[in-house]
Image (cartoon, rainbow, N blue to C red; front, side, top):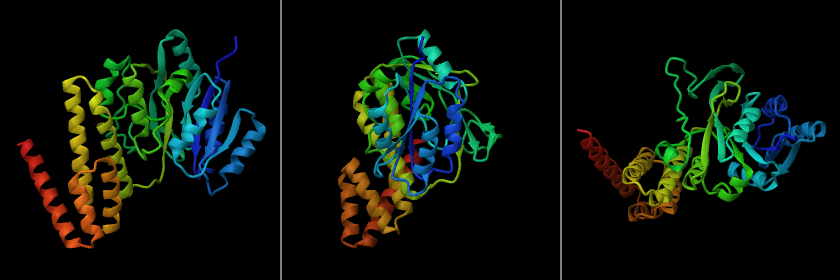
Length: 335
């Protein structure tokens, strides 16, 4: 009996220094019937050469190219080209433990109704994959799991996934036919695109199972990345967009109110972020354009007009009054 094929989809942008370890790690998997589709996101380093050097020695590794459009677009290209019965997403700097594929397929074989089998994960510091952590702060004293480890269909998963993402992008092994039914990643989301994707599986009442085998984990490398104010703002925009999209779909009052609270918290944090950067008018303008595109509130349009008309003092006064009004209103709710 032929082993089912797994399509591994790896977006890559200037990660040539991580690719050899990532690809050697895949070659060590106990399940060997896989293809690896590496989508080069117009890298300016030697990623293309590294990928081609591995592909020349292993026919399972394939090089794909796209102009710079981001990881969601890269994953979508991979999905369209995938020939496997199962899909595994993986980032170019991360690793999988040796039996992840074997154990995941075994669970699918015993549970034919499952759509997603997802595994546990750990973080590791670049250069030290022998010491693993639950949290990306890599601090043993405060280290604790953040994943929910929930199983089941819509009613089972909903309470957990409405509080935030329940897994990293490389945790799940997914049936390709179910994935085709769900559709592609939302390429307009800069952050939380995986959370939004899993939400679609949940609202379609697809069945999730958890693989708790010690050799099935996905390992996430922690290294220097950008934590700029712009990226923080885009993360918050992602949360706001997801709540706006899914609140109308929630038919349970308690869960809907829970998601509404997350939406209000996102709006407060977005406005706080603008307030904290109120002297950086380029940041404020860029942020307001993103915010208005998501939620065209008159207040945000007015702030943008003040900046465009160079009424900077009026803008700063307005955003400051707005921030302190909401700050004290929030404080009073907990008194």
